[in-house]
Length: 102
Image 1 (cartoon, rainbow, N blue to C red):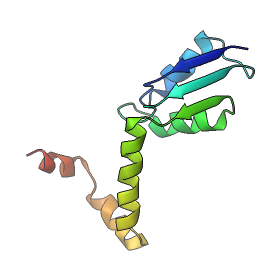
Image 2 (image 1 turned 120 degrees about the vertical axis):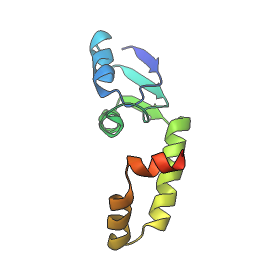
Image 3 (image 1 turned 45 degrees about the vertical axis):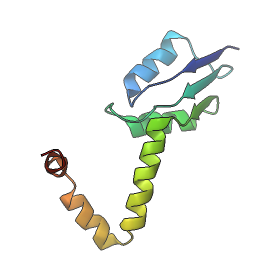
């Protein structure tokens, strides 16, 4: 049994899986993930879900997870019904962010 500690995966699912292969991670091992699983990479949700389904992987929220949770909380409180969700999804785009930085 080995104990591992990593951080800053940033949604890089492929690299996370490659790392597990490199260390020959087994069911007897324990992996602590010290935050920053989400943000930047291509597959943050897939990466986080994979970690959550592995009982011997212990993800600990970092500042990027905190920002994500705060954002989700605001969206959930503002977008309460199906029509609001559709409206938000239609308007949510890269153009929205380009206008913010203009």
